[in-house]
Length: 386
Image: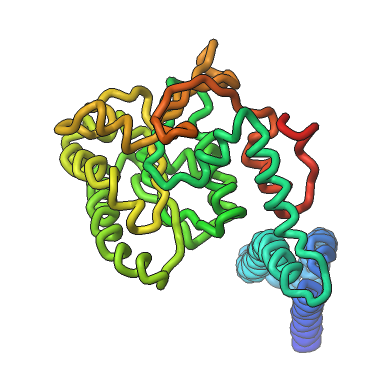
């Protein structure tokens, strides 16, 4: 009789094991066939686990009665039940681990879906131009954007985008320096096929998720971001590599072997004061006055103020800075909201003279709007010149 009971118990356990394996197999198949149904399958499995727990309780009661009928002592019955409970706990742990692995797969698939959707948008944008006999939608959007930029206040924004002089965007906290820089970088990318290669930022661990997020989403893994967590030694190395890169790119750009590119430096005022990268910042600033233009590279630097020390140009003169760079100063009335008016210096007038003038930034000049305009065809303008 006891042998029959052990056989019955073993068969029950085998049946339960087969049930769990079947549930897990079905869940994996559904995960492959339909991602959206996977979460529902996990809920079904969780429900099955609850039912199985009730079944185990019933089995324990039956086992206890069976053991009593076979004249097992209470300690022997307790020992057998403890061993069975430990085994069941191991089985449950294995089951839960498999559920956790499935959840991990779901999260991974969701992330891949986001990446795939972004890649699809890029491919679709490329295919528009490749389709024979169709209107070049991309070029139409570029032309319309150029028309808007030229019509806005004598076209100072289109000059800002196309001139390959180093650009310094100056201003205090909340003045909108990062927003303006992101917009210019995106417009140069969509209109001039000019990718962003590097960001130097001591607070990149935060800004890559906030201020630079539109840039990270567009340029992805091809974008090098240096300086996370105040890593000033890495920033010093990036300054040196940039100077070396310009030197190497000059002959290649002259021969048209390479195209244009961009780089961005944030909080230059602070970097020029840090002993770990102070000298490198000065050399970077000095070389940036002429080398990037010859190398086909646009350089944007953000700073709180525009003194020679703050911009790393300790040995230079105000005249050299004003004639060889462009400066755009932004302001905020409350330290949080940028004002639309800006002061611009270093752009030439019709006679080639570098003049200082007041200008304004249009309402639609936002990174997310520019991306939506070029990628999704979203209308972001009012009347021409707005």
